Image 1 (cartoon, one colour):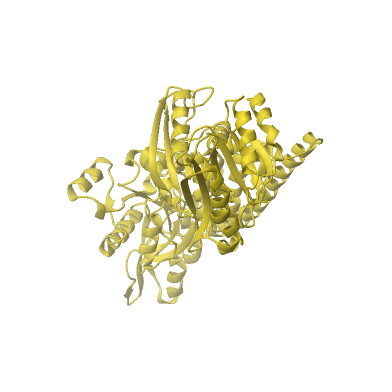
Image 2 (cartoon, rainbow, N blue to C red):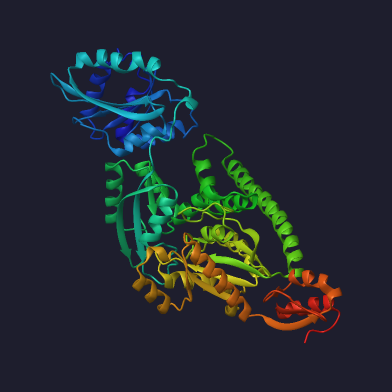
Length: 586
């Protein structure tokens, strides 16, 4: 292949002319070279018609020559390919290059001799501020090519297009993904993957359409291509034949595989961790959430960023110095983020210590991602306190509010981040730090989604995560089945009985929220101590002090000789209540 590339490089720096006036001479020289070699050639041509780079593959030609620059408007290059066959269309990979680099155009000129030959031209144009592809195939004589190109392209392009990037909408279409579902059965390989339903839900959270699926079951990863050579060829052919924007893997795959696929197809490749990182990045609202996501991104992509930067940098000397400086820069970014996170953690620790002094009656909403925690949080308060949507990981930081379950029982409720089985390790620490709020809550409401991931998997994932943060007091866990309005009565009854879930609700039904509040009162009462007290009328103010710590079962009863109250409290609150009363509780 190197010998063939050297043969084609005889046309380096050839001047086609701004209006392709030297096209006939160029084709004649190319035909002589093609008679000696088998490989077709690709030429990167400036607007003035001068050839600047030659390669045997369009991806390597464009990516190596342009170094993925940040374009301010359209790139002032076009790609010319010479073929020994008549082509009717460009493949998806070539179209992706045209869009990604906003090239002037891609032209295909056959080297065949004939009275009329195909001219294939694909270019960008603007329609309603959107970039769209325009493709033309025309059978013209060689003498007509120059005139048609001048009319169709060179002469009119500057007049018809506005080259200011901010005047066009580059989000041309909804992301279209090819989804690669892998199942690795080896016990020696730690497989962080999602099943098909969860995988689709993750993609749809980023508004990606799931156009097509490829599946592969492996006993163990293939040492060369990870997915097997046959499946790899099928994957590449599928990507190059259709206009996808993303390739998604349902599990973590090596960076070398993603890099190889990108080189072969010029396709954006994401594995499961990339997908979750993108979701977290999109939904992160607070400073802490953004810092955690950025740290996880650097941990996962740092080495690959260094490799890419070194490969794409033009230098003759100082390779080691450049790589070392880039690595030090990544390390400094991580340290700065960790320091900022430590400040956030210290602020949270101070707030949590203040809460732990009073230890109010509190409830954390726990559940798998998209189980409806934020919707329930809003329903309990009767207003939109937090944003809720039918997507995964809508909530990435905790929100805490106080609510009165009745006239005498105040409850502090916290909305938390959703769970995900096989959480990517780079997000694991950030995920568990958001659950620190759950350790402060006296009770946990565990919300189950009957129409998402299997209920058994949800429960196993939640129990495992809560156990790891030291929350094993199951007597204070309250299981609730959400989205009952989506189930038939018989199916609902079967699920409640099978999984021993006492309550079913719908966040859209007011009556079920009222029933949930009564259930919470009943469940919380069973885990608390009770005391019947008679206070003097002079001690009336102490009732309000105690209500900030404990709760009353009912309204105080005013007797001639005092005020009778039915107090509910937890064991750790006993000492503070006795301090307020001035004597021991019975």
